[in-house]
Length: 128
Image 1 (tube, helix red, strand yellow):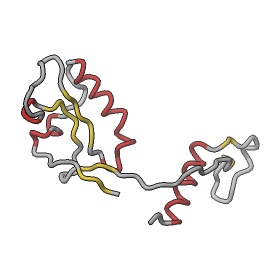
Image 2 (spheres, rainbow, N blue to C red; image 1 turned 180 degrees about the vertical axis):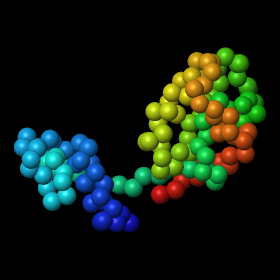
Image 3 (cartoon, rainbow, N blue to C red; image 1 turned 90 degrees about the vertical axis):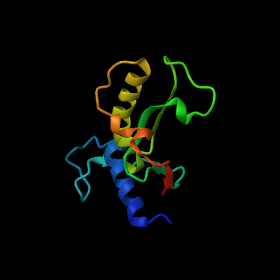
Image 4 (tube, rainbow, N blue to C red; image 1 turned 30 degrees about the vertical axis):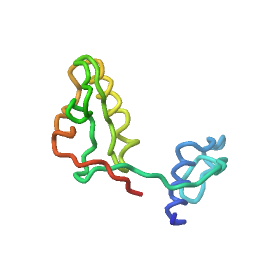
C-alpha cells in the first residue's frame, strides 16, 4: 500500500531536516544534500488523517446541544480540534494557540467562527 518512491521522498526530506550534519559542508551528495543519512527506520506505517466533508477542520468549543444531557458550566466545556487532514502537523501550532486562547476565555488571534459544528461541518471521517 505504501509506494516506494513516496517513501524514498519522505526519507530524503527527513535526512535533510534531521540527518547528521556533514562536517565537510563542501561534501554534498548528488542532489546537494549536506546531511549524512545516519537515520534508522524502526517502523513504517500508514496513519489515519481525520478530515471533514467540507475540508475545514473543527476548532471550537462544543455547544451543550452536542453533548447530550448534563450540560456544562459556562466557564468550562468540551473543546475540539480535529479534522485537519494532511495539514494537521503544519497547522498544529496555530490550532494549539487558538485552542489555548479559547480555553482561557480570551479573544482568539484568528477568526475560527466558521470552524465549529454549528457552521455545518459534517462529522469527521478517516482518510488514508
